[in-house]
Length: 192
Image (cartoon, rainbow, N blue to C red; front, side, top):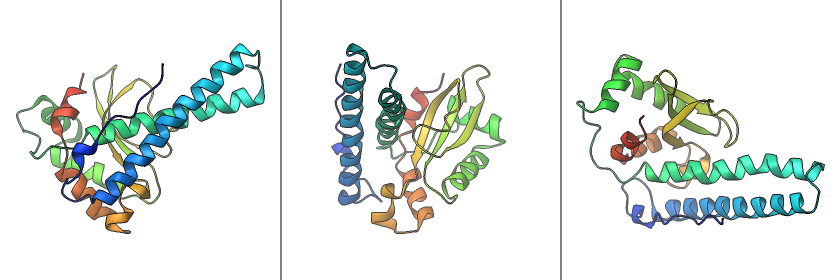
């Protein structure tokens, strides 16, 4: 199976995100898709060739986590966008955020604060599939820091490529634009 990059060009023209920034981000995403396919092919060939126990095989398996998650996290990220409406207070997700964080506003305050932290990475809202609890996490690298047993509901890219073209070092302005463009229907559809 070969993975294909999804077409997110419908996001062009989204307020707060220039065409240059989005096209560069789409190109970066395409690279993750291409590299995921290449690494999967190389791993399969190494297994066929009896080289599964080699250091090269081990490094490719480690690399797969980086490329795979780079591909998938960007898909979640781009699919977060395209909305123009706030999360309805009567929705199950809104109520769950309020129950788990004290209020929707406290959840958003925490999510934004994590996104404003120094460093590169991702901010994710996850649902613990055992308890149903919602939690915000910092994910430092694509392949490190994802909570086991949790479903990703919302992801915000805070690597510099996601905002520096349009916002320079003003990450808080990027976070504002991120929230203004959230597609809450997509996020709500991930809730179990």
